[in-house]
Length: 154
Image (cartoon, rainbow, N blue to C red; front, side, top):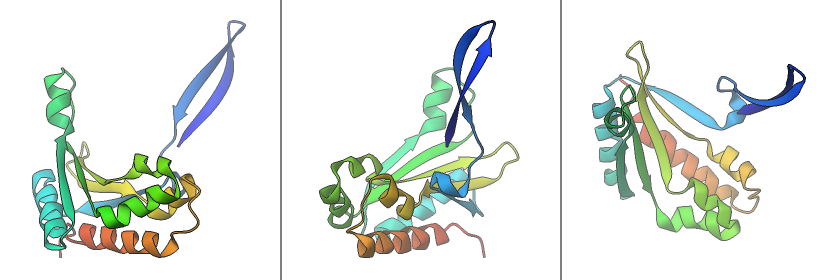
């Protein structure tokens, strides 16, 4: 969630962007993993494929960032989805394609903890004004919750 502030500095108006900490209203769901980034990604992929969901791939953001000269902690973007389900949202509002396929960000914090984050499907529905696909959003929520349950250490 971004908040825009207008400030006067030396008589000039300046528009600043302040990024606030994640809040329930920003649509991000975060799940703590009991595994390394690599193992978390492997577990998500295995569960997705076991469910018969199409696996699109993984972008290693840390590798790309580090190669570009930035110091990026382990971070991978995992993409998957069920076209029969995901495209129903696009038929309701084409801009919903911004949120499909499903993306799960797996990242490591400075203290070594690993998390998986994804967009809440109710938030996606609100974002795109989709009110005619409740059953499909409920199903998508159940699937992502099941997939991320595979990364919680027992």
